[in-house]
Image (cartoon, rainbow, N blue to C red; front, side, top):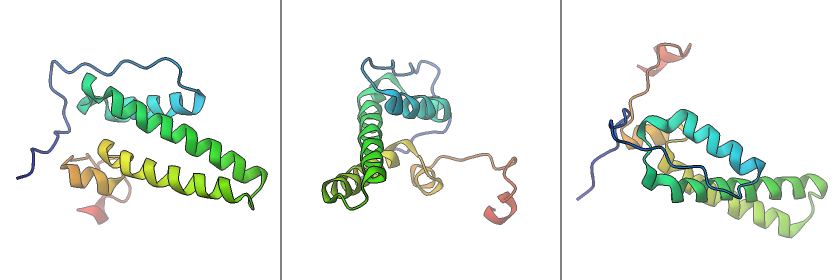
Length: 120
């Protein structure tokens, strides 16, 4: 049996995960993005998973930089592919795409979206 789907509105006693020390700029930017857009349904216990997501994003970013320096670097291509796949798997837990949010049962207000009429 499946568990209950997360609600788009957080519960009153939810505590936002504390930003961990030691994240580089790329990881910090991802942390801030997720907190800004997913804060209503994050809790303190989501901190380790969010940290892993941000660290993976940082590794992916480094692989992108290595590919920019030398697009023929096989190790950089393999690293990018692996980090991208891992990031995509972890990102689904945080509803990073519309499909992910739909699977999580999150209702998004589309009033400000110019394409909303096509989504209803």
